[in-house]
Every structure is written in C-alpha cells, then in structure tokens.
Length: 316
Image (cartoon, rainbow, N blue to C red; front, side):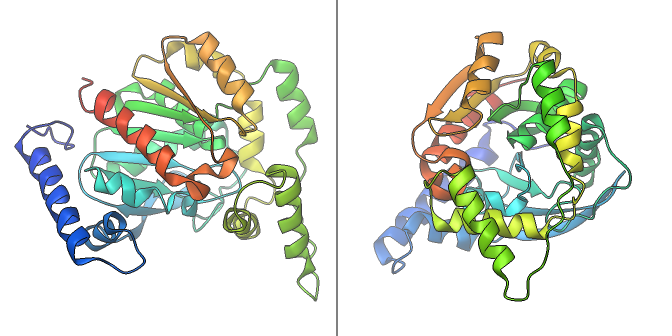
C-alpha cells in the first residue's frame, strides 16, 4: 500500500500504472497526428501546473506534472525549471509527480538577499516539500542542481528517498579556489540591435556545447541566462565555496545513481565521485552532453525511471 507520500507498489500504484498502459494503448489505435501516442497521453492525463511556495529566501516558483510519489528536479545554472520540460511528462507517465523548482534567483523565483551558502540553498527544499505535502522525495540534480541535491541529502537524509546526481560538481580545494577567483558578476550590456543575445547564443554554442546539440537547447540556455536575476552569480559562489562535497558524498546512505554523458563537461568529476563511492550505480549515456534532458530525453528518462522504480520505491 501507499504510505502517506505515495511510495509503494500496492493496489493504488498498480492501478495507476495499468490505467496509464490502457490509455496509451487506446491512443496508439486512434492516433494523435504528428505527436507520439505516449506523449499525447501524458499531456492529456497530466497537464503542467505551476505555483509558488514560501521558503526562507522568499518565494520559490515550481512546475509540477503527474500524480504519485514526488520526484524533485533541480536544474543547472543559469537555467531554470524549463530544463525539465521534456522529461517531466515521461516521469509523470511512469506514475510519479515530477516537481521542478526554480532555484532562488533563476527563472521565476526572486533572488536571495546577501550571499547564501550552498547549505542555505539546499535547506529551501525542506520548505518546498512541506508546502507540497510530502515527507520525502526522490531528488534529481544536474550540475549546480546536483551540488544542491547532494548537500540536501547529506543534511536532511530523512527527506531524500533516493538521489540521482547528473554531473557531480566535485573539485579539489585548489580547483575551488581558482573557480571562485574566476567568478565575476554577470553584467549584460544591452545593445540596440539585440546583438547581445546572438553573441551569448554563439558563445554557448561554441564554448559550452562545442558545436554539438540542438539549437533549441542553446536557445533555452541563452534565455535562461538573460532571465536569471542572479547577476552576482551567487549560486556559483556558493557551490565553489562549499568545502565538504567529498565528505557529503562519503556519508550518503540512500540509493544513489551517478549519471553522466560522454560529452558532459562534468564527466571526469562524476567518474571521480564513482571512485569515491564505487557502491553507487554509475551510468554513462552517449547522446546529449550538458543539454541531454532537452536534446535527447528518451534515454535519460528511461535510465532515471528504471532507477526510480528499482531503488526508490522499494527503499525504506
């Protein structure tokens, strides 16, 4: 049976899964034009809902899709919850509630006052889970989101059923010091012809994606950077200033999936994390780099949902 948060494989969850399969089979017979039957069914059953909750830093905006056990999706910097827009319906179709918050200062969440620590960014998630009415959740973080998710799991293990770290931001003390030194305030000079947007687009395309990936992913990255109110790069400063990532990683006791891609900039640090914790599951995908959740959501979703079904549902 479900517990108070919906985790379990009792009749309620089996009914939801059976209903999903029947509905998807029916839609496959009638057809949905150019849209795949599975995704058309997902969108019909679980439209996206949005909301705000009060957290210690102010208000936090989030997107929610689906019903069932909560899966928390934490985005990279300087993106926001739109990073997960293609994988949320897939997670919902698997019988979960996919909740994607905007980290304070990004998307539609107001920026924090002062310079928060990484611990303070992580602690916002306690208030979020309380507000949406769940005791614990599966937590998935990407890059900066993986750092926040890891620290959240370390500080509040009772609130994290399982953890997916997609690109672990793990650095030596020397690397952290160098990265902190190189973090500068982001001051975009607006140009009358809008060329500042195309310049940033080209920079992402050439320097972050190295010519790979879809134009859609580059555009969303560009728009996320322009929308972000984290002009002082507070999230990066908090991440690079945090001295205990290796300690936190060693202390985790819930099921953990270390996920990366062959073209991900944080593949080497994710491999390092696996050497520290060889007991954690490790998967390397081959088709998306840093924008995989947008550019190639199917293999990412299949890997993550398989882990959720096998490890999160049966844990505790």
